[in-house]
Length: 326
Image (cartoon, rainbow, N blue to C red; front, side):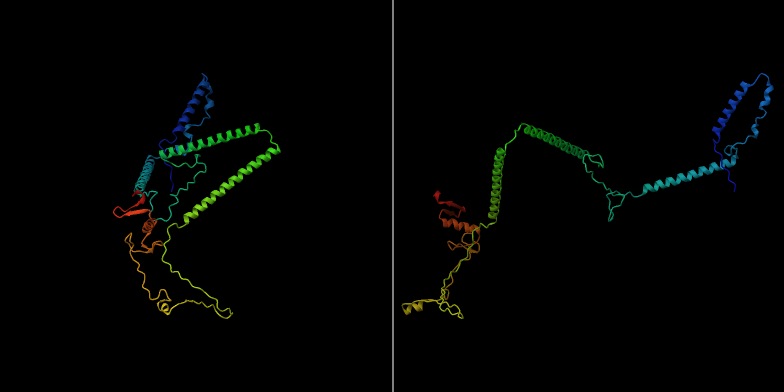
């Protein structure tokens, strides 16, 4: 099939204008060079007739029906493209926009949502700056200004110290060997005193720790049974064991009947109350000095005060009053 290119509305307009300008220029030059007599017109016989000149295909006259059909087809194609673009934009608006902080059960966030922001080594640099609020910016600026102020003060201080040391060295005189030895002895004494002080402080700290670990509460003593026995080595043979003997002398036979060899045999048990007389609670311990049973630490302190014979107890008010008030 033979397809022809459709002609544009302004096809060849600029070229036609240029051609007309060139023709006008040539005509003006020919008119200026022409003589009064037209005998020399034979020079222009070699010019080609305008009817024989062939134009480019873009400038050829085409059929009006074909051109109208092509224009209509182009308009229809443009309308179809506009409709597709409108549908695409409408669908894009209807899409669900998921915010970055949402997580619908995803184990790891998407790569597009990840932000690997590495903090800059220099906090005062402008690289990798994060968007902050006005309050955060003001706080950061104050902190940075404070750091810069401290740096400047340290630099000034070090400079002044260096100047002082230099001036001291300049004014100092050269020391002799005897003066150096005297200074060395003095520094040695100072160092030994400092070491002794440090050792004493450490020992005091250790003693305080040991004292704090001790149990300073009163000892809760239960009744203790004391017995005495004597061992007599009667036989010194290598194969014999040690034998203990208990000798008792009786003047009369009546003493033998009344004497009990076992002190705890056939003896009534000692009555021990089960209640604390001070607190009224069940007794758990026995006071070592008085033998009175008591329940807790408060009762023990009360018994200690009673044993000291320096305080009197008022049961109505529950206060211990020293004897000096009476």
